[in-house]
Amino acid sequence: MVRLLRPLLRGTTYTRLLHLWVPMLVESLWLFIGPAHPWVPALVLVPLGLLPAVRLGEGVQARLLLTPGARESGISEAPAATWRDRLRTVVWLELRWVLGWVACLVSVWLLVAAVELAWCAWGHAPSGLPLLDRLPPSRALALLAPVPLLVLYGAVVGLGALVTVCARRLLGPSAAERLAALEERTEQLLERTRIARELHDSIGHALTVAVVQAGAARAAGDPEFTDRALGAIEETGRAALADLERVLGVLRETGRPARARPTLADADRLLESARASGATVDAEVTGPVAAIPGPVSREGYRILQEALTNVLRHAGAVPVRVRVAVTDDRLLLRVRNALPEPIPGTGRGSGLRGIRERAALLGGSARTGPQDGEWAVRVDLPLG
Image (cartoon, rainbow, N blue to C red; front, top):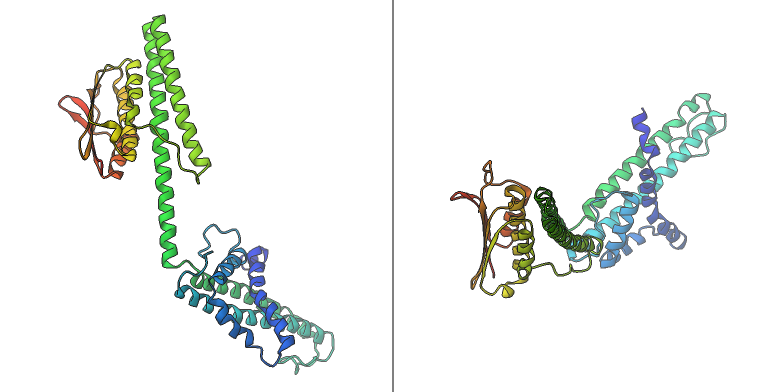
């Protein structure tokens, strides 16, 4: 019983009833002008529904009154872009007009019926309401007085649910709107994934360098080495803070393009950071690095950063060979280092997965794993 009466406590029940009554306000004004032709407003709705802006207004009103507070209402809030959308709007306006008439007639008749039954129960004669005008005055009619109210309750809830279903079908997004929404959602997910990779690569690299430097300084016990380690930690921390501020700026101001990210032209910063952590880095760069397209150069920088971070995190201060080669149409990145103990597998961590994802997004390939007694990261990216 409580479950059946629960809609009485929901505000949606009453906002939907209001939505059904709104067209009848115009209809009631027309009845004062032309009571002999109550169907004229229904004809006016046909050309009105062909206006693109009408669909926008109906969508906004339907979302506010039929699905208040819902994040995914299934109702579009956009002007009609095609003739199919305009025809759907016309059908919606006509259907809403019909349902409004039904809601008003049912509401008025059932309320009057409840009052009439109570009136007859007190011994008064019926006032002439159809279907009740032949009832004799009787106290027993008081038991029937709540029946019209229960029927009214069911009609209000049912009509509200019906008009909501119709709104989703007739005012729902078209195929073009659904495709645009899907593309926008995909772009948002890609942006979130990119930001997550950015944070993982930049902050993870900085923390790894700081941990390795601090451990090496403690083990060395040399004030001069400790001073160099603290300087490297400070420089790496500043770079990480700059990266963090840039990413947070993207999150705060989604309408603005992101500021320039580091590229392979800034790779010396990564190499010096790795050397300051105690690793011996043998780097060789061939080809016009400055001529690499921006997206490829930026992703290449992050791939190199993650590869060096993995070396420091898992192998420590070991010799590392870095090769960056730029040809006419390819960018080749190779990072090799001595294998730590125990020998890892092919690499399933989030960092190595990020390397493969970055390469795949650019149409390239990335392979990571043991090779000839060393750990190797081999990335091949097209420049086109």
